[in-house]
Length: 273
Image (cartoon, rainbow, N blue to C red):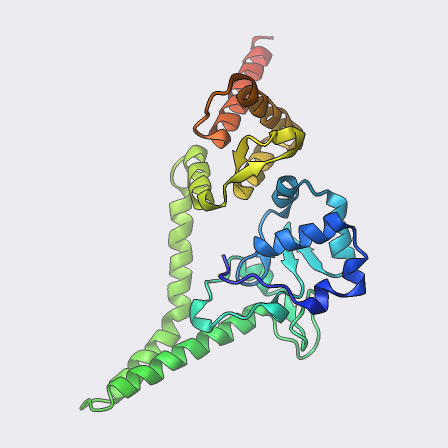
């Protein structure tokens, strides 16, 4: 996640923004707090559930031009007007294909409409990377200024720049092979571990202030079982905790296990018939 999450007053003090319902305004800030280095928010519908916002709030942000919604990813349109990270702190793009379809205007706002002369976000990030490698090459050259073979540093730098794309592809293939190993349970455990720091209480009548889930876990459960089933089992678990006062080690795994067990029972009954 990004180390800084800032908002520009040019956006939040504008009449168009202040005319939005307070729930839509709050959703905008929550999305910004969960955005990555480039203003991308994975599974925004999970954020809606967490903050008790509605789909209409997200629709308003999209209609008013504050958020782009592409392939299920929410993109904060004015992110780069307020967030500038040093090149050496930028992490790799999480969605490189999508970044190739987002373009940077002169005022540093995003658009999904290609225009002559506008670079894509992916091109901008690649330019940052090239600049970072150039600085490293210059530093290495300066440090080896007294070497008998000063050309070796430049040669190594050129090799690094040339082979960067190949290494990135190999890393991607290796990551894909790793993700293919194991069963679905192992993958969900990895996702839950990655989002452990973002654990928070789910409020409202559904979570009753006792249900602990991360944004990633909520999105994963909703994708697996659907919204209606998620609401049912989330309410079931929160009611169980409130009524019995017992502690449940993993709310995420408990909901998933209940749902899977009920599915097996239903499938068994159908087979018997």
